[in-house]
Image (cartoon, rainbow, N blue to C red; front, side):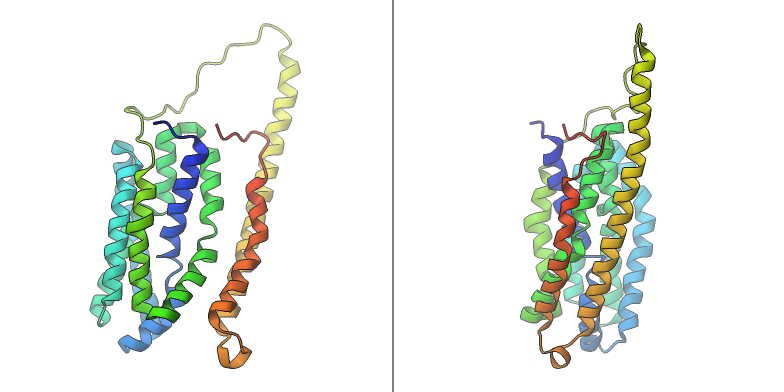
Length: 284
């Protein structure tokens, strides 16, 4: 079965949102509670998270070569299992050694299951036509913090930080794994980087050159505008989220989950970016 590109973008974008929310954005909400219960300083928890980032850098090239050979579907499905194992180990941590070991396992999954692997998967599927799907996935997964922070806060308030880790692990098995399993298998041969040979127009070539040149100049400007708009929106959400995180029930009279709901609602206007089309963008 051949899936439309928008379908692939929806599947992979949702899976990427889950992967980012349960890894990169996790310690911002759970690190203080982890540190208190394990008798550690909060910086120690973030040091363990930094170890995960370093490990992910080493595993990135390995996952890229594997995607080149076998496509991204089996790699991303495997990372869901590794994410689930790492998050479950994090929920079972009893001290600094087990904490660092759990984050190291999460780092292995991060190196094979975040943007780099997702983008490589799309390139393996679509070759030079992967740019537009990559843009769509970036826009969708950009809401990982918007989804992850309130959900982590809700699970922590209801089940504690260990329950939150177990909850994210379950989501990888029940949601992330099926999403990645629905991705199409890549062609036997990678999509070539060179397109079909262009046939010169017999006449009137100059008439088509000017509009095409103008379009190629307008597209980068539009793309840059979208890029910097996204950066500023994301920075604003992060700043608002940081302020909300610092406010407590005693100081503001509003519980933390409601504060993160405010942070979530502040991001919804940027959904309009998903409806803006580039001059040369297509989602066939």
